[in-house]
Image (cartoon, rainbow, N blue to C red; front, top):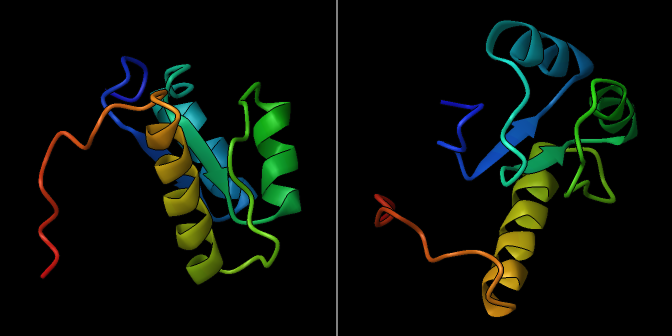
Amino acid sequence: MIKTGGFDAVCFTSSSTVRNLVGIAGKPHARTIVACIGPKTAETAVEFGLRVDVQPETAAVGPLVEALAEHAARLRTEGALPPPRKKSRRR
């Protein structure tokens, strides 16, 4: 599914997650948003031929999630990203 665009985004939290996902499942589809937790992880993603769309200023999970949400909201505002396919299960 990762190669066919079945995921809106993928978040990498370490260089090993980049290597493992690409090694096992292949590169994400070109329309999949790629988010990396920090500069070393982003560097590895680029080495594996990925386009890094999101990288927070602070390398931590909370800022990564916030940066990804802000990026997706910006793309939706610009009309470059369709609305979510499923309603959130959060309450």
